[in-house]
Image (cartoon, rainbow, N blue to C red):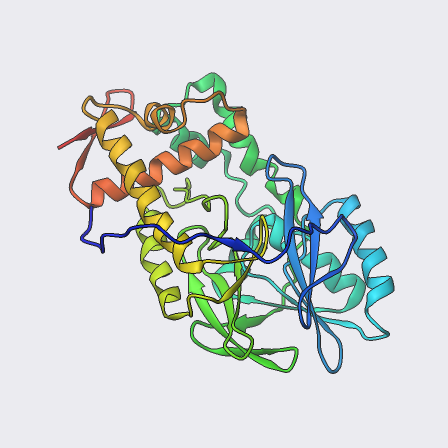
Length: 348
C-alpha cells in the first residue's frame, strides 16, 4: 500500500442530537439550517436533506428519490414552511438518485434552479434519460469478473432500471467548481470536491458557521460505497477516495458535519482516520485471499461472506473490484485471463 501516516483512532464521534426527524418533519439542526429526512426504499432507508432560507427564497441541498411518497412529503413541506418565498435553488452534492432523483420534478413544479458540479450533472443527465442502458457492456463486464451467464440479468438489473429512480435531470444547471465559493443563506460556502464515491462529489464548508455539508463523502457510522463500474473498468476509485479526503484535513477538528445518512456529528478527523484503517484492513483481506488466483466474484465473497441479495451482490462486486484495482496499481496483484475471458488476480 502507498506510504501514508500511521493513524491511531482514539477520538469519538459525537452526535448533535438524539432527535431523528420523522418523514415530513422539518427540524432546525443548527441556526438557519433545517434538517429533513426522506425515506428510501432500500436497506439504507433514509437520506438527510438540508433547507436554508435566503433573502429572496429557499435553497435545498439534495432532494430525495423519484417516487410518489417523496413527492407527497415535499408538497406538504413546501406548502407549509417557505413563508411565502419560492424554492429558488436545488444544490446537489452528487448525482446518485437519492440526492438528485427529484431535481427535475422540483425544477418543473417550483422553478428551482439546479446547482451542481459538471461531471455530476453529466452523469445524472445520462442516467435519468436512459443513456447508460447498455446491456452488452454490462454483460461483458460481469462475465469478466466471474458472474455466471444465468445470473447476468439479475446483476445488470440495478443499472438497467436506475432511470426509474430519477425524474429527467434538468438540461440547464449552474456549475459548482472546486475551490470556488457559493453563497447560501447570505454566507459563503467553499466547494470541496471529493472523489471515489462519485465522480465530482461536492462538499460545502462554511467557515463563518464552522459547518461542513458532507453529502456521502464522510458519514458517521458507515463507509461510503467505493465501486468500479462497467463503463470505467480500470478505474482506481479507492485511491481517488483516500487522496481526495485529505482536502478535508485543513478543516477544524470541531467542525459540525451534516452528512447525507445517519446523524449530524462532530469528529470529522476521526472518520477520515477510520476510512484509512478500514480500507487498509480490506486490502489485506484481498491480498490474503489472492494467495491463489481468484476472479472478482470470488474476491467479493472473501470480503462479504454474509448472505446478500442481488443488490447487495452488485455493490459487493463493485467494492471488491475497487480494492483489486488499487492493489493492481500498487503492483501487489497481477491479472491474468482464462480462456473463457474471466479475469483472475493473484498476489505477487
